[in-house]
Length: 100
Image (cartoon, rainbow, N blue to C red; front, side, top):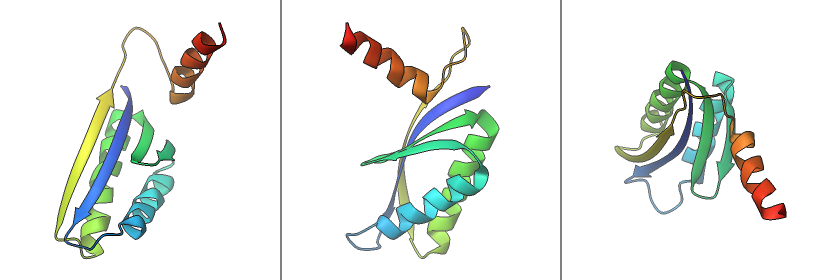
């Protein structure tokens, strides 16, 4: 099953700036070979269910390895069974409505 997720991992107990932890997660996602798009408050990831959720687990492991004692994660998950749809398809659909 294909899935699109919106992932926001926030390490706790590491100070105010979390950009180095976000960068480490981006490396994990890149290494997984998944399609992704980082935005100001998270990252959209698309791919096969198992690969995406394995990558989320590896992001948690990496952030803990970096010294974060706690992590809070917000995860939105979307799947479809009626047709295939990518992140780009979803954005293009809205853009088409805006041009009308």
